[in-house]
Length: 157
Image (cartoon, rainbow, N blue to C red; front, top):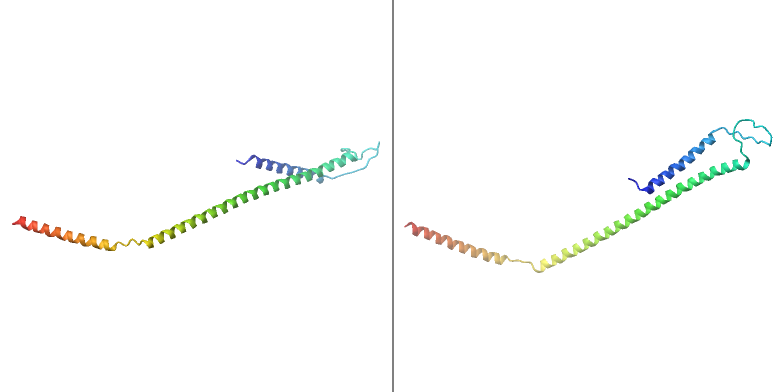
């Protein structure tokens, strides 16, 4: 349903948020820090770390936060760039179709003007031929009616 790239981005985002949210629990605990010297008993039960290890743990946590933020920023920038590319492609397509439509309308208008000029040059006014045809048809119809009437009269006698 969704492209694999989108799924991967979503999973990366969820993992980064999980890392960020899971480290906040550490800050919620009461922190008890005591400096111990060699052969000195610990005042409470817990995990003992030397200064370098503690610094490494804190640095790793800070590094993970920064890395997660950078990954999120990178993914956002990728999505923005992809959307800008798609928008540019759609805008170019729109401009092309707009220009094509304008060209077609321009050609149609030119053809309409050409046909109008042609129609006005040759008006195709055949009214005198229609009148002559009507007169001839009327005369022939009158003769045919007269002939039929004479035949009917002669056959009745």
